[in-house]
Amino acid sequence: ARAPGTSPGTAPEGERAVTVRVPAKVNVQLAVGGVRPDGFHDLANVFLAVGLYDHVTAAPAGPGAGCAVTCEGPGSDRVPLDRGNLAVRAAELLAAHHGRAPDVRLHIAKDIPVAGGMAGGSADAAGALLACDALWGTATPRHVLLELCARLGSDVPFSLVGGAALGRGRGELLTEVPVSGTFHWVFALADGGLSTPEVYRACDRRRGAAPVPEPEPDPALLAALREGDPRALAARLANDLQPAALALRPSLADTLAAGRAAGALAGLVSGSGPTCAFLAADADAAAALAASLEASGTCRAARATTAPASGAVLR
Ligand code: ATP
Image (cartoon, rainbow, N blue to C red; front, side, top):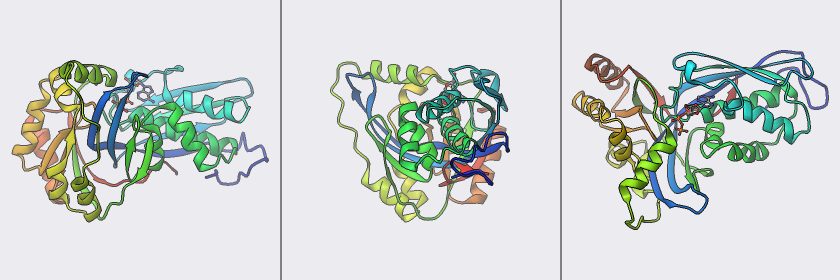
């Protein structure tokens, strides 16, 4: 994808800023295997992109400026503004791949909860790759963008493609998962975040030396997605990280109970948490559920939205 008015080889810099919209994800199944020799876990990870979005803008910067980033929105004070920011690393990786300078001003408008278990940093990395590719006119083939995404992090390739997908390996080996219709979700946003590596460590500690089965995708869950059946999907939602997230943040049990009491078909911790995700029967049920959750005082805010959402797109 290219910015309007740019084509490869025509030095598009200085033209116009490019904005990319990128979705959050929820893991409808997160099956976590044992620890691998490289420290990662083998996963069977069914990703669903949902309609909460960050916007990443890439604006031209002068020669030698390097990559700078600014950030606005809830929790943005907890987003690093140096090379710790995944969007900066994405811009630098794309520039290095093309043997060019990473001169760009990135701006992230955050709506995806920071350290919320919804892959916000990964979304920003995918957004920055696509935005810089358009700004710089580098016309990187899709399969190369996906390889660069996988080098940036396990969840980054999915942020680029969106929809629904099964991630194997450490989550980065994607195959598309067919979905029918629209699923209605409510996300209960928490104060503060949870560190993903800490949640994985807590999961390993809780398992101790017990043998861990190979993570496998659940055929009934994949069928529920394919058939667009929210009740069948609700019955199969599964997250192996949930017990660890609840142990680290016991108040999430109250949030899950409040959602279930308010009529959710099912609720689970999103990824490594602390966001809790609830499936609703339809749009009206989702709106009512969001209102009840907000009134329950067990979350900072509740947001109703739909899935599947598209992956990273130029605006
Ligand atoms: P995941 O679900 O992929 O494990 P998460 O949604 O729990 O991740 P993120 O919002 O991606 O968490 O942030 C995790 C940490 O990454 C943050 O605490 C922050 O220090 C760092 N980080 C780096 N870049 C970003 C970014 N662009 N946005 C948010 N956090 C970022």
